[in-house]
Image 1: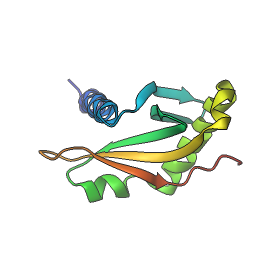
Image 2 (image 1 turned 90 degrees about the vertical axis):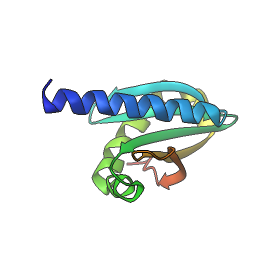
Image 3 (image 1 turned 45 degrees about the horizontal axis):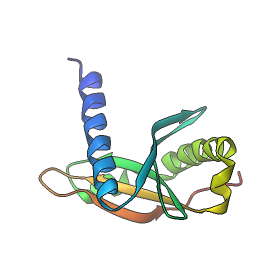
Length: 122
């Protein structure tokens, strides 16, 4: 297996773990790996009147995972969120939030609510 393929498998496992973790917190998973021109949303999850757009990062430490969510990544994610919202107008009545699930070896996932600010009006 190439290193790129191995990284993809690792990423999919991290996203599956993150989705499971969010379900334990009573979120309903609306979408995984939502792709739009110029960006991707790892997980779209809903709990009540909140829709969370979740970036999943797996790194050797939580801190390294948090740092990996940089301004460029947030801009790309925000573009995908705008496309998702246009396709799901019901969500305009909900609170919208940019969350992260950080994955580190031999540690439970860490859900960071409001980890980054979404740019919904670019």
